[in-house]
Amino acid sequence: MTKLAIMGAMQEEITPLLEYFTNINIVEYANNKYYEAKYGDLDVVVAYSKIGKVFSTLTATTLIEHFGCDTLLFSGVAGGINPQLKIGDLIVANKLSQHDLDITAFGHPFGYVPEGSVYVPTNEKLKNIALEVAKENNIKIIEGIIATGDQFVADEKRKEFISSTFDADALEMEGASVAVVCDALNVPCLILRAISDTADMDAGFNFDEFLETSAQNSANFLIKIINKLIK
Ligand code: ADE
Image 1 (cartoon, rainbow, N blue to C red):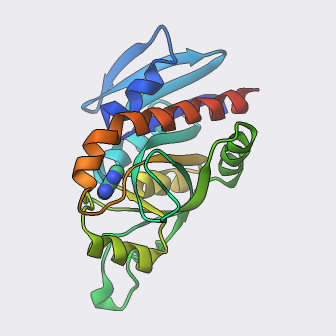
Image 2 (spheres, rainbow, N blue to C red):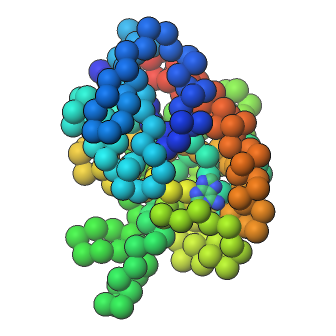
């Protein structure tokens, strides 16, 4: 690892991360701000993409192709599906899928397009380091499947569809697109999320209430992972 990308989707997801860095140099590129800094000897670039698969694809690609990052860590919040996940809890993705990708009219499964795959994996080493860090610090974390789509899910029926179709433990709006970019460009990636709501009727309300504290949980844990990576 020579240059680390740290990504969120929303300002609120990267603000708690930026607090760990000093001497930040802001670069404007492709309608976005990229925060260059050093963490010890390590070069890092922090950015939030804006919400959704398209913006997160653009930002992940830019971090790798323009800024030259060779490892990508994502931190943010998610809606919980697995009942073991309570608000504030952490999940690290072992694989992700796009729940709103639908060419089932042609006989394909949900989430699949020709030459693609329903699930895209994350980096096993990084995921295992996350699990180790959790163990060492006595922090609860679940390893599981995250489903991504361009929808804020606040509906039991949609949640149930995503749960049963993809066996998903959590859902959000950027992880799978970032993982697709990293997989295609051979850049190890980690997708970490803390639960802000449970994608039900109360999701909008809970999201507003818990976005900041859950984003902070995810950010604090991500820094612990980085500390382990540079040790
Ligand atoms: N991110 C956090 N909560 C979410 C939800 N309910 N739907 C989509 N993305 C989310």
